Each structure stands twice: as structure tokens, then as C-alpha cells.
Amino acid sequence: MTNRLRRSLRARAGFTMLESLVVLALLALVVGMSSLLLRPPSGRLRLESATRSFCATLRATRSRAIATNAEVAVVIDLDRRSYASPVGGESRLPAEAQISLDVASAQRLSERRAAIAFFPDGTSTGGDVTLLTPDARATIGVNWLTGEARCALG
Image 1 (cartoon, rainbow, N blue to C red):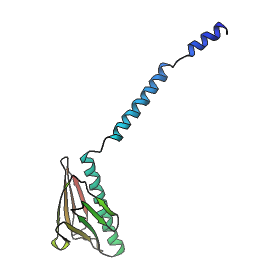
Image 2 (cartoon, rainbow, N blue to C red; image 1 turned 45 degrees about the vertical axis):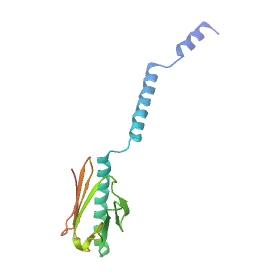
Image 3 (tube, rainbow, N blue to C red; image 1 turned 90 degrees about the horizontal axis):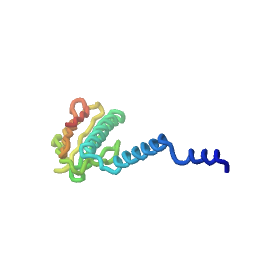
Image 4 (cartoon, rainbow, N blue to C red; image 1 turned 180 degrees about the horizontal axis):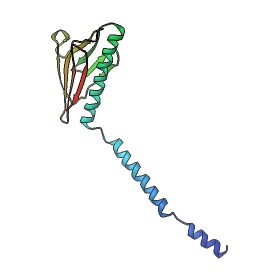
């Protein structure tokens, strides 16, 4: 080999500073993303997600009652920490949450089960559900006159 070819090959050996920085940046990005995926979600985040899902189920159940011109109910089971509706099936509430339920006595199915019924005209039996965790508090209220579900995180 000629001297010029050898010098050219030696000059090209290794990586440039820019290539090294790009690789390090990509590694840092992957490590940062993986730590987020391995960490369990916070209690506040689980409560917020469950509250939004519950409110969506209440609203969809009210819409179903109006659309089908029939009474439809959401049943809340404190023992199973769940709620069920013909619209969305059964869903769970956070296991660590303390749940208090305030509904009309006629809607109490048992000591630990109750329903919030929606009628074809959009009204409901109304009720309030409070979810309390060490990290946060959520209040879900259903207005009996309008059937509107309102959710508040605090």
C-alpha cells in the first residue's frame, strides 16, 4: 500500500465527535423512556383515570336511556370496588380508594350496592360518589333533575 492510502485509512478510523454525541443522546433518551415505563403510575393518576372513566360511563348511560327511551342504570358495588352499566360493562375503581356513596334509599340494592338510574327524559335518581386516596380526592355527582354527571378532582 502507498503511504497516501495508509494515511487516508488512519484518518478515517474511529468515530467523529458528532457521531459519538448522537449515540449518547439516543442512549439517554432510551434510558429516560424506560424508567417511565417501569415505574408504576401514581395513586393520583390512577384515581384521575378511574374518575374520568366513571364519569364517561355515567354520561353514556344517560345518553343510552334517552336514545332507547328506556330506564338504564349504573350499579355500584362497594365490595367489589366496581361499577357496571349496559353501556360499558363492568369497570374497577382504585383498590386503595375509600368510597362513599350517597344515593336515594329506593336505589339501595343492598347495604353495599346501589344504582343511579337514568330515565328517557334525561332525568335521573341522582347521587354522589366520593373516592378518597392518600394522594387525592374525587367527587362525582349526578344531578337528579338534569341527569348531568359532574366530576371534580381535588
